[in-house]
Image (cartoon, rainbow, N blue to C red; front, top):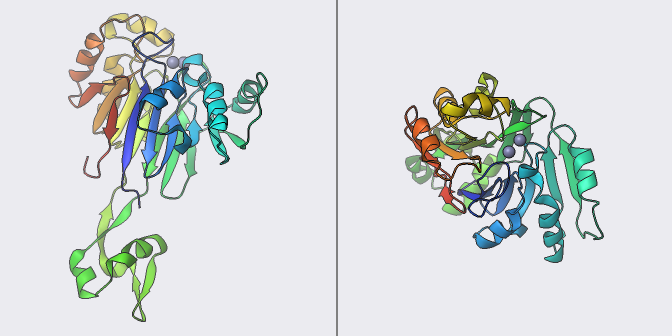
Length: 304
Ligand SMILES: [Zn+2]
Ligand SMILES: [Zn+2]
């Protein structure tokens, strides 16, 4: 069972790094393991400043191969090796991932003591990791690009009265949840015997770089948290769209139209010293919105 989902905003600025913002990376800790959505240039130093250990990262999902979303990979991987990692690392990306990452990971002279498995994600779909999955769909950018959703599995709510009535020891509850049943004093207790209703799993979606596109609403539907790019504001809309991006207003409309609960804006153009105009235009249509700050952390609660 997933008890904790925590977000780490390791890089929140778009296009190129500035003294104020690193380029894109979102860490997500799921119980005791972690994944990354994107890996911009300074991701490893941000990780070192955060409370998320880079050794916990099991898999990395790259939205697309513009530098602000993946150039942190070689450095991060070399450091993992220096730290003595032996566990396999999985990297998922859009079409072309095998050749881009193959070149990138053969740069320079270093040897790794762990395996890297690269998988290209085509079309739309979902990769299953047991208690959670990562769904993906094609974004609307200037090159092949993906948007992602981390989806926690729905699970049965346990009913206290039934647990007491059937005298099920607490230490067996997790086993029953995981395996569907357990033996209690010679009786088989099934999950149906002690549950009542289903708790919907949490969902954290991340747009990557994209124009506002109704095709992405299905992926984002009912997100607990939608992390959406907002490169510029409405006054610059034609320029923002021509570069394959969204405005603050676009991000807010996607949040509202997908029935998401909370919106976090990222990927601000480095041309903005003050991002408040972007935040304010988003807030005018979707009130539960924040602009991500560097190294901001956010717990995604069961009742959020
Ligand atoms: Zn970008
Ligand atoms: Zn891009």
